Image (cartoon, rainbow, N blue to C red):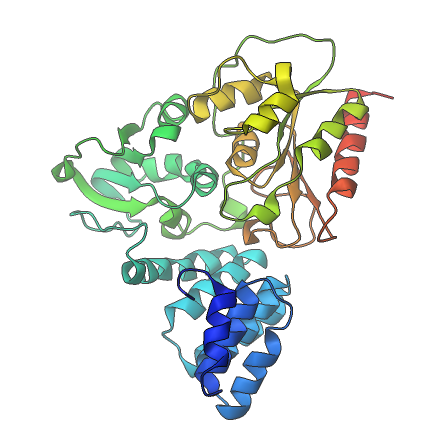
Length: 386
């Protein structure tokens, strides 16, 4: 039940067991991952029974991290690691708080523990028959391997040219959605589609895409900035109004990121035309949007990039299209739920990842209206609308 994500059912099971430190810790995890506010007391009670119980110490750190208090979380993760220095779950979660705190070099180094976790869960990573690259100059060819979600990949594509400079040749094992976009943006890199035969013997080493900043020993001062992707814009439709692309729904990974469509359509009160960039709108949304929808839906992210290049601005929730707009250098307003991904750090309204992006953070658990109103004011100011 717990592993399947049914935390309420799992909690009922654990309440029927003797309330020792492991069981109390599991109850705390059920409360935390289930979105309840009462997780911390379970971990505290577990520590009353076992003072240095690492999973309970980590649970307290996770509570701080979930609340966005990452400096406090890092202090607690240190205590948890003092009790169990090799626990990969603790180290992985600590890496996320390091990222949120802007400690990039430390975060990227600690994030390498994800391969130990993925080996345990059999997710994402399957080591190919090629040695892992250590970042050194390479006389042979290097192949970079995709991993994780489309937003993560778009964010990290910026590192491909730096890796290319350290190898005789560079190839990227690429998902279908990104094939045309990567080929157009990096013409000196070989693109290998997932599912196509790979001649592994051609490559002297391999590297996971999200490991590149660690392997290249980068930090804030050497971070490659946007724009770094490109697409040929489609034909410009001139309606006499500034055109603003909108995205209101993220993936099912975290529905708390989603903003109601009708809320985003209020941007039109700023004197702009809204253009849906949403991937696979529902039938109800299609009926609501009518002629605003493109005649032909985008086939891949290259088509979406072409649409973005036609826009004057983009307003989006936290999803891959937002990363795409930032990587293209489009003026972008990003709507962030309170529990924003750690890549966006805390409090700040700008993003070092994407200089053309402004972050609008939702403070109320139920209200997107203030964020959308701020985006509308910014659009009015940008386009001189009354």
